[in-house]
Length: 374
Image (cartoon, rainbow, N blue to C red):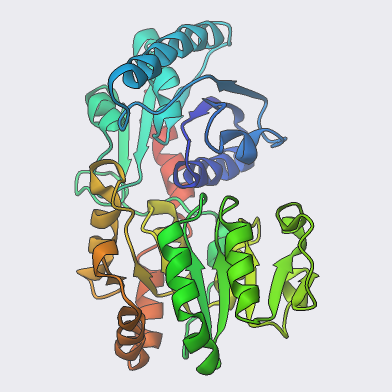
């Protein structure tokens, strides 16, 4: 079978695309990717040899744009659609197009509708995105982890997050994680808590994003912390030197107070090392934490489209499987109160989080697609 995978812009959409690619490739499908030159699409897929062909088009987000910038984004989408129609017409029979959402999914998704190619959509969030709301009536199959009408409700997650899952029994390592781009609010929260965390003999793993790396590192060094830097982040370290900086692989960084990284390809391993996360509530991050059995305090990004991160986090909070705090309510006691509540039932929550996921989800979705295409 031949499939076009489209969508991205953010790590959340792209993580789902990668999970599907993993399964499609194992099933022997010929896979093509159509994404954007913006966002992280290239970082995820430009060198991926499992893809027969890759196209990165000039597209921009539309939802949060205003005035001239919105018109410019719509114009770029229209041009990208024209290019995509040529790409799709030049392919031999495409069995279906899988959209994981995001602005870079628009050209290929509308192309599927215009050319009569079966469109399969996976919606990641509790609140359906605008593009997917428009295209839902045109989709042959519409997957969601939240909608009762979804044929399969489990979230597509790469197998490695299940393989390295464990049940937490005590909190020793904290993970501060702002998503693929980092989050200044979460970075500042970590810095404000750092000395208290050290006094409690807890270790910090901190994903701070590329733009904040130098500032956050400098602040930690001012506090005289021993900082571990992953070798894969050497480019971000630049010319900063200090006797308190240790560089190495993840397993080598054992005698440090903080492991600091801008972004890492070793997230499954990092999640496994940690016992509690303080993070945004993007869908992929949220479900990867579930698969790994890692409890979390969610701080939704307040400017996410339709406030979807709040609804994602609320889904777990209502099941008493996660903690939720809005940015304006965030202060140091929120963390300590959450950990105090967690202490008595951490093992049960960790186990129950894993029950919210299935390591067979992607395989089952793939089988459902194949059996329901025609």
